[in-house]
Length: 302
Image 1 (cartoon, rainbow, N blue to C red):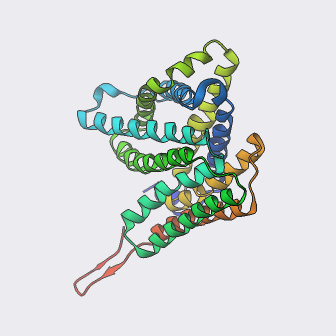
Image 2: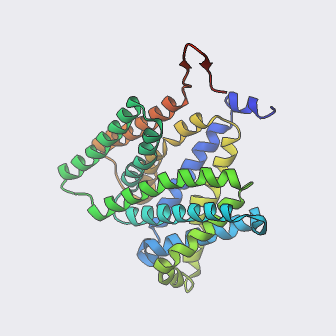
């Protein structure tokens, strides 16, 4: 009962925690792209996940010996989702602008939310997001700078894995305590991407400056945002958290502009705005409780 008040009213610091997570994650991704010419996208992914796994395992110290087989299966699936989501996303931003990649990637959770809700208005929100993606394509044609189709494909793959990540993380949270499941899942993800990024990651061993940047990327793009998000979720309802998280495409565009000199035109801003609005709208719609009234009873959600 003691936790109910914290979920029913807005905590003054929760907004700062979620915004801090968005900023840390996207600026970490922007920083990661500076390593691509040296280590390749998969090499950077391997180092980022590897460093994050070490930090999280040290902090969480999961008691894996007590896990039953069902918990291990859940965490392993969580690790697969993490590997696919991170690897595909980094492969995407190696070819297309950061803000564009994040906007496309947001199709994953948007479509998942619409499928799970089965409500017509949620499909409308997904349609608005698709309009935004089409505007991005039209803008690239107008500027004679067509988006790399391979990069777009990788962003769509990342979107699919992001949807899988949402489902897998929810199951892992129900079977493990604290951040132990997350720590092991990140370690599993590191092992899975290692065959694709081993050579690039090994190249960094000869240059300590690259290792420092890779460590900073791991902290900014994994450890810090995960920690801030967990802290925020303890203070605000999930639907408020989701609305705030919907700002990520806009934050990504800002990070791309400031760190990578990736300028955003008016049409791109409108496109990203469509995705942000769609994400916020579908999150708010999902927070409205349904009341089914029949002649026999009235069902009100707890």
